[in-house]
Image (cartoon, rainbow, N blue to C red; front, side, top):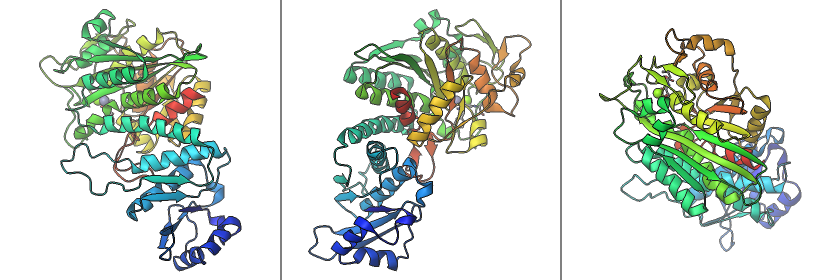
Length: 472
Ligand code: BES
Ligand code: MG
Ligand code: ZN
């Protein structure tokens, strides 16, 4: 399979040599299909009987001006899917090297292929008939870049773990299951794990987190997994993920039509954190990383926190719960206070925090909030490289007025307008001086449509960006 930009037509150089080797069939294919190299287009044909290569295909990468790592990643994904449809058992891919160099290009191509071919049929009773027969893939012209390919494989293991955690139903992925997953990672890769049970959280005064956990019959699990490098760490960071294994809304119950049946995705932040842990533990950067999630469910029962209850978080701040469906920020409040005490150089949280964020940026783009420009820039740059779309939003301090409470230090929700911003401003109340960023991933954690290397379902959003950011 050959990736062609619009400018690589007519065939020149090695492409015209290849065309000669296949008796002009490549040119015939391009002519017959009026193939112009437009992004996402493909054409494939059979070679003469007797040839060791059975089929040859071309794949459009669009204009080379607009080309970037992500278009190569998506191109490699289309190549893999086309080969799969053609029932190929082995595939050779020839793609141009992007200007970040061959190692980075090989990594991106590998990511596109693995993620495109990953399919989750754990919850189907019959085995998947479309299962790939592809057993070998060769990246032509990337010999000598095995380390980059290995790195991509490890990162994809992390992405796939995150996808599997998000797509599993809420009766399977419970807070305990998240803690067990962390325990497996600790055992497999020698990480340190601490799981705080309800009593330990009570002792730490985590009233905001425990307020959310109150209605659930399942015990909350506060997960703290640590990766420490063998040599001295050049920096220490904490990555915190919202871990609501199901969000019913609580007594402010989500009505039908609100997507309540999709609220298993509300642990997408925690999934990204555990996925990143799996990759980071294997890649072994010189950075100490704390992976944290205050996991629980948001349920209804006679024990549920009531709208109007006042909770006290572990930094002593009081919160009037005017909406029990704004629960993620309550769990994150105590997780942020906890992470802040670890003395890290930076902390980031990833959370499926607000529907307002999806209204603002749609399904593909996450929202980045940070009072620290340097941290925001380093995260934006990591996301540009990983191809995970992220857009910085303002932390408009004035909007905190919307969270003022008559009786407590703050309410947990403000007006509808600017809902993702007030959520970020709420979280800021639980961070002291540590550089901090909040990423609202409510949109991109899941896709309903085929989207590049993401099939419909969980995307594993955030893992690649986190690994990139930590490894920098
Ligand atoms: N988990 C939801 C946010 C969400 C919505 C995630 C859609 C993924 C897709 C969050 O806990 C929530 O319910 N937020 C409320 C906040 C409101 C009560 C201020 C929302 O967005 O409606
Ligand atoms: Mg909610
Ligand atoms: Zn939620």
